[in-house]
Image (cartoon, rainbow, N blue to C red; front, side):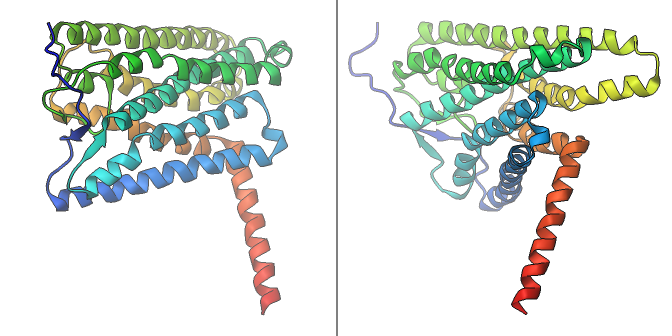
Length: 322
């Protein structure tokens, strides 16, 4: 039975960051560059898709929606990581921790749903090309995107509310680089309830991840079956090239997420916990703009076109001032 004098901790202190000032600066500089690149890269994709009407197709609408979510997904954690690296007291308030968990997981789950919708879009485009324009209408595309966001922002709410009712009266040292469900739950004072909650959270995450993976996997089985029936090598290569970017992003994101959330309460060392967390919270979002811009011919050509127009505009303005 809980004692009545137990109170909830007012803040958590991140204990996974390096304590040496030199090591903190060494970590800060590349992390700042990565975050700036993620925001700038995704803003470029959003702007390019918005400014060019020929890119207002379902595939690019999904890509721009993913870019928008990526900005907020990384903003939920990386700015706090950066400030923690340069501050002596690496702390976050209890309410701030709950908000960070909520926005990190809500945008992350929205991305999972969106990647699933993108797999469905590619399946229709390749397996039913004649019916694709009538099925994947702009209205359906918008509905799918909004449904992904609604699902993402509703799903983690029960867990956040649940955690907010727990007492945290012991150590407030969080062995992680940002607030996440399992590290926070390990600090809860209620022994039996905390164990049950960790198991429940494991099952919820497992169902979310496995469902998305199975749906994407089935979509690609259908896609591969159709591509293999295409007679010309050029036709097969062209059909598969439309899916490569999505497939790479899917493998990067889900691979690291599965390592973290499909362990079923198995414990890793603090080093591996931190490394896996960085993989899906920082590195995967870092590569996404590169994959979608460098591997996409239309986006590359559009960016080059706008850069060329900007150079001409700058050149004329400079000449006029002279």
